[in-house]
Image (cartoon, rainbow, N blue to C red; front, side, top):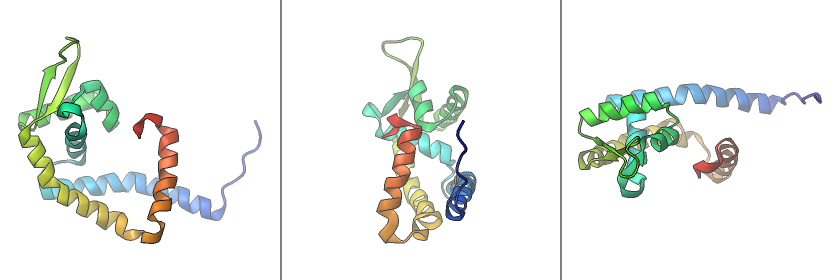
Length: 154
């Protein structure tokens, strides 16, 4: 194996800062959203993916993949959302072994109501920290990293 080139000082700073953001940001957004809306970040994300899906529904396996949750975790989250009448869970119409989650009208309304709090958190914790002139370039570079890590997430 060839020797790896060490990270430069700037690269090391970027790498360590990115690691800190990956740990701290989801916690902070979750706390903000839960306090302001009663929805966790995970619940908000599930509702968002369902609201954007064709017919506002996804197979449970696809929903788990979209939200980066395990099958058991997505089942628990959907069960909680179902108990609040924000999501329905049904048998798949052509595959009786599979289930689909469907966002309800109440779920769509709850998502619309929570959006301002989510947006405020994104702005306060991230976007307001960037120079507007660099946002496009940073977005492109991070999209390139994301595409290599998970090519089907476009």
